[in-house]
Length: 221
Image 1: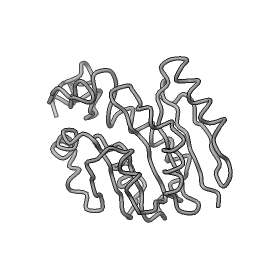
Image 2: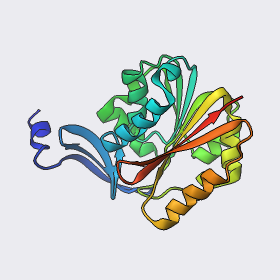
Image 3: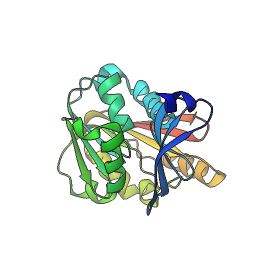
């Protein structure tokens, strides 16, 4: 409790380790919140949890609570999983895919992710997983980062077509992106303008927490 209170004055680091994928990972109290940060950005909980919650609100909590199966690509500490369960009261199945087993260990220790019975964690590359899975999903959350960098495959037509094919009728994709320069802005503009709109609608929620843009894709048929 004392560390939590002191964190309103200065961040209090509880755990730190080097990471091959994110350079470093820290668990810390920051402004009264327990969060995970990578070297250059908030990685889970804190601002990131608020960002994805805005996207979920845009889709509609009342729609999400009626869904059966949600796929999370990029679990990290599990902040969006906590939002689904604690804020939305989602009772269905959640499959979470995370490439870094170390961050899942952190999530289990500091955020009790292992205690969520409806969550199945798969340690795998997101691209490889979507190629292999035979399941269909009502919502796919794409939140894949290595520190501030987004892997190139996220914008490839093949990946987009594949995750769209995994959606049930009236399903949604919530794609979290980070815009730090003009190149990334242009990438998002091109992605949205060139999206194949047959049976899908696509919209952007721009400048969430300054550097993030959320893209919402809805299967209309």
